[in-house]
Amino acid sequence: MIYANLLVDILHYFSLMGHPSTDVNYLTNLNDIIINYDTGWKWTISHPSFYHANRVFSVVLATATVFVTYLIGKIVFNRYIGLIGASFLAILPFIVIRSAWITTDSPVALFVLMVVLFSLLFIKTKKLSYFILSLLFVGIAITTKYNAGLSMAIPFITLLWVYKSSKESVKTYMWFLVPIIPIVIFLIIMPYAILDLPTFLRHVGGEIRHYKVLGQGVDDSAKAGLPHLKIQLIYFYNNIGFFNTIMVLLGILGVLFRPLFIFTLIMPILYISYMVGTKVTYHRNFIQVYPFIALLFASGFYTLYIFLDKLQKRFKPKQLPLAPLVVTIITILFLAPQAYSTLNLAKIERDARDSRIHAVNAINRLKGFKEIVIAKELRIHPQNLRVLNLPYTIKPLLQIASSKSKEGVLYILPALITSSKWREKKEQIHKMRNFIDSIKSDSIVQRIIRNDRGDKRAYVGITRLEYYSISPNILFVKNF
Image 1 (cartoon, rainbow, N blue to C red):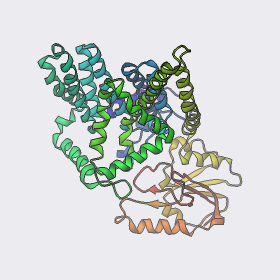
Image 2 (tube, rainbow, N blue to C red; image 1 turned 180 degrees about the horizontal axis):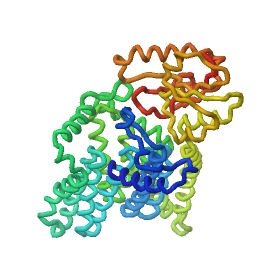
Image 3 (cartoon, one colour; image 1 turned 90 degrees about the vertical axis):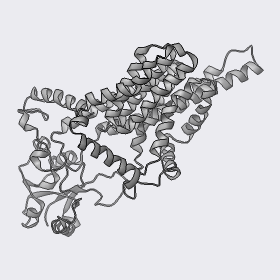
């Protein structure tokens, strides 16, 4: 995904170079792109529009995931069940929100699904090309997220599945292709795994120890096994809802009518079994399970249809078939309200802006100030500074604290400063905190607060000294 996003960034760079300087988003030179080597910060989004371009790319991949879910549902059941499964996945709020994040979790879901899709096609058609494509996507999935290595089991199980019914369709060399093709694809995409083998092994080993032994602090860790499984099941339930969960459970019966559905569910079962054996409880790691949950949801309607159809034929065989009509109505009743709710959520996500953008817009609406002084620690991007209507100066927070406030000057300050390097910067942080805490409430003109977790306190945001903080809480102060 690093290389894929780099390609997106290169294309976006060419686009920005063609924008006039009157646009909010433009570049005049490659050197205008400032990265962490230039700033000294560990992580820097140099130009916000690059971030947006990469998010669009993530959304495109997530959209493809919905389509592949439809194809799998169509192969295992029929096109109607595929459509129900794809629709359910497309309107899940958790998936909608996470699909726009620039992480490996959503893209790897697509690649794992592609492995399952081409494996199913090989089972149905016995064509070698589909088997090779499934192995190719195993390699791509592993380069995207290492724990996707579990998907290598799917082509192997596919061969066993086909061999059971058609031995002549499985050649001896195909067993050797299972490890060879994914490894070759992995090394082509990730050559540094060989060129810098010690670093590669150190990073992979570090992640294994992180997940299996160390965990991720108190809030995001659990004992491996059943305690971890319980946490993930609660996450799934909260993200899906009560009635949808009932339909998902009903969908398990779909394996009775479609044995191929058993094969389809092998991947999520393997993945969940492995991941709950670790200590880190990040639920984003389970995004790739949701397409299979969507298929279970759709399978629930298939099971319901089979039951109603048999019931009608038993008691009133001569009447018009009501099962399709009843199932269609129930499907609409399930999906329509959620689709409406998720659409509104998607609009909110689409219109969401970093708190610094809100701050700049709010500054331009304020009256009675002649000048602005902005704390350097907020790292407001030049792209945003260009639209300010008033002249501004950027100063370190401690420099602002050491001077007296001036009449007619608006001070833009972070609500709270902290650092992961507490010991090295302890004295500096204390001075900053003391300054912020000394500001009287009647001196605060406005607060720009990002409330992610429903916290009603004024100081819930954090501006890290060494990081490009996302949506820090901001204070507008007129005197101190």
